[in-house]
Image 1 (cartoon, rainbow, N blue to C red):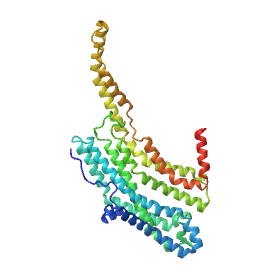
Image 2 (cartoon, rainbow, N blue to C red):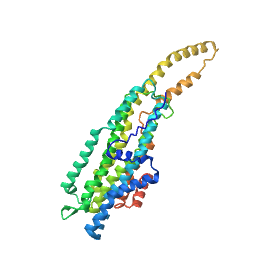
Image 3 (spheres, rainbow, N blue to C red):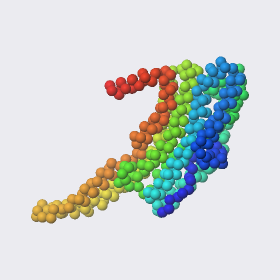
Length: 384
């Protein structure tokens, strides 16, 4: 069966991605891509800096803008990460679809059902209704922030207000900078939802898997690497949370301990968001494992009965020792089936996404707990 060469561009659709596609962003050289993304980040950040310096003066500019780590992280770190992450996710998804065909997990028997799933994802990905919903969410958020003074929090872009009124820099932030970031964030959330829908739907198909596959998960081990392509996105999401926490510490003087439950909840949510999708395949893998165990058990009985008769004859006559080579092969098949895992989350995946969630919080923790002290405390607990 021919392997499709179509570009599925899993992270696609939406206003910003369409703009990037029309500008032929992916066809540009790496240098041009970096300049393009750097230019977009500066468009969102630089006017804020220049206008705030002009309006606030150096002293307040330093106190309110330069120390606003949250804004800098959003526009200078998270924004570029979310843009560059698109290529790795798209490439990984294309490789995944190709691999389904190359390995004959999808063949002529289940090809039609599989491609119905792909076509469904394509329609959802390019849905104009979703674009409208995201735009409404972005500017509804803008309305709330503009009318509630950024939720009445002095720690959230504290430089945007002067004497209770939104500054020119504040309006640029609310009308241009923040919507650009939010369009990306909401689109990535939707892409993650599409990935979950895809896994859920293929888990119901009759995929041609095998309990004897060396990867120990029925032949679906390659999906772990597809999931790992979301690592930069997980890192960006966690960085957003860490940046907000950092602002709370700087401008409100709170302790991390005061918000440990809230921070822990955010960390767990981000971790689960990028780990749980693989768990959707548990029913499928459990079905494969059960099917092969019952199949080998059924096929083994005639051979087992025949062997027992040959063994009895050998005990009586001492002649014609029965051939046991079949038993070794059968035992190996049973052992491999018994050892087959039904959970795709392995140590590498767990460590990678745990690191993506924790790393952005290390600079935040270091403000109140020196990393050297933290390291030795952890080391002491591990050795004790």
